[in-house]
Length: 362
Image 1 (tube, rainbow, N blue to C red):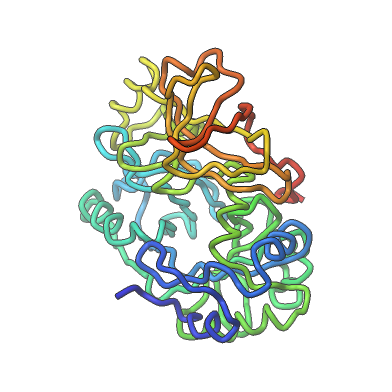
Image 2 (image 1 turned 90 degrees about the vertical axis):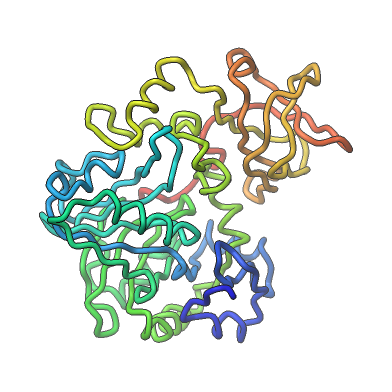
């Protein structure tokens, strides 16, 4: 049986279509549809229930506890009150998970992981942290609401006094409806936005308070996927997996190659020789959307790779996608063909992100 967030009944009462995602029953979309939800994110304000995500608390110095060796980003120089995106890797350099590390204090950390990987990640952390650390999995006591969009700061200012001081990828502890909680300026949409970590048992109160502002629209996983593909953000199980490294996914900048970490030797060897496949971004010549699992072909119709993610982009009016091209096809390609045995569609390769008008750093 799938898990349910503390806001499940709210989604049902609002008429959301609920689907299983990563072991959780989650809202896919609400009755107004994905296009209206997309508009709310790109032009107004939306709220996502992301309580399915996992949260770990680690007490202890990053180098002494072994935390610094588990993740690819540098932690010793990370300022308190900041977040860093990176990876936990296996010994082959493949991605166990992508994650965000919050430095809560000099010797205290929160790590946010993907919902489907909570159990696997917790086992990996416990196996590789040293005895001096204290590890707590608080995933099922921590709700998370993501308030996103150009109006998100304006919407939250009455609820979160001082939120305007947060810059991109920083966080603070705020009084929100009588609860001392973490609020970070982070998100998955490419727009200005915030994530609020709130007590599980009291999440309904926050949800209702946010939605009491008529400018805010509840939004689901369907539009979240469209938004993240428009800005070329990876999704675990698509652009990253135990068999896909950050180098293959074009995310090397989130790896500190100067320090030691699990999987470093394999990753550096892969980088030196060149990855067997490389993630590319492409735009359809039409409104036809690429689909995960369909194939990529060269201009002369030679199968050259596979699609990791694809969708129709309301912002651009065309189909967009990300996929992996085999090493031998990546050097000179400017156009690509996508499809399967039933159809072919031409596309041009583009650079990240597709959507460049976001308010992320406003």
